Image (cartoon, rainbow, N blue to C red; front, side, top):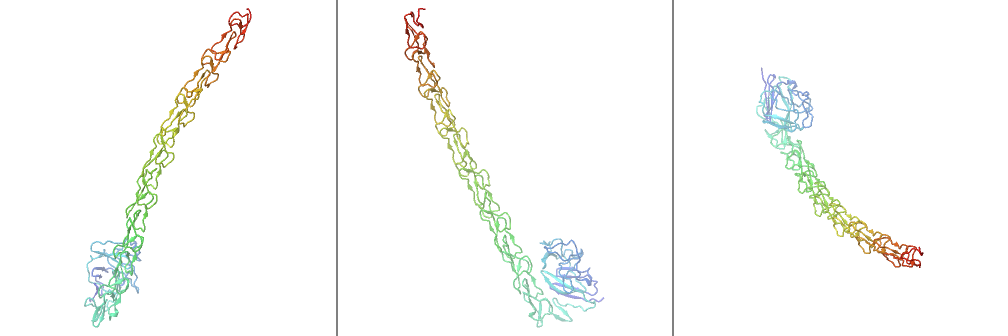
Length: 570
């Protein structure tokens, strides 16, 4: 069997082919990545993968195609002229070359693997563990181009097995019938293939003249000489100009999370990027904020303000009843008992003023001391009761008032004083009790500061009385403040109560006992002709008096005895 062999070297790509398809079919990327084509027929080199339902979205982009269990492809890009831009492999040989399910976002590769990113912002893991191979029959790479840092091929099948194939006798050049053509990234300059400078690329073979080199577009670069394709700026980097040999890192305060960027995005408010070359912005941590975009750091919340969430563009004022006196706070402190903060955003709490108290923490105001209590120091957590003998009538007092004269308070914590009841008095301030009026005195109404003497004609023999009693009939008193009355003496009387003196019995009347309310008339046969008589005189001989209460006796010669009541012999 005759074997035609083609040996191709493309920036580390080695292809070997034969006519029969009997050899194991491979080709190799970057001298590291092995693709197996042993199960792919020559007419289906670029066969499209069929659907495989277990493949999921990658970095929020849905793959247009998924792979059967035996095959995988990198992306769903569609090629030109009916060619499908897929790279196939036999999973039995290189099962860890690519991983496309279930989630390809932010991969972490194991040892001997690296992460690659395509232009669709998809991530794959590429291993270096596949063994190299050296035979690929019947497959000719028609086009090679770089998308991101992955290399893609469009394959065609020779129309006949007898098609004249090329042989490669030196690395980096195609040789056809012993005629040299300059390889990708080089151009013919005289009889020498010259490398395109950094910042340019040449994606064709057989080019002539330096004008064949093409500037890398903005967002792309070539850092080395003789490049066939430009490399895409990685995430975190950008290039706004064409023809550049490197990409610039996004400056601090900016980021870019897609490849091939021509500019960077500002970090939004609430986020920052501290160092150049960032692919994302970091949230401001709790206690910090940033109200402007494009910043490289966050600011601490000022005193009086806090922020408990990350990624915020402003801080919140400490609510009323709380405070914070340090920068960068993630929470506020409650005002302790005895203190308050009335408005938001406070750096300290104020003491409750005198007359006010607060027994709870975290309060926006203080409470006035209730009536009956007081406080005379700032920052009080409770109020004091007014002691007995004192009172506070209205809330919010700094001191208690003495009960005035005539009033008293026997209990503490009172808002008023009580008047001394009738029969009592008090003549000093701050009294806790009242005094009884002594005998001979009285207080008729409550709230008296002194007791009044019983007036003449009246007396009071008990203490604590609200009135005096009139001297009963037959007695009298002619001095104030009497505790008792005097009996009218014999020969005198007092007919009605409350007398200040006794009256003499009138002529014709007498009273031989004391304490009487009336006088007795002299009986018939007697008389009295002076006032205040204690007895009557019998009519003498030769006189008589037939009636009582008389002041004289009538003469009668027939009356031969004293006390005659008639004028007759018998």
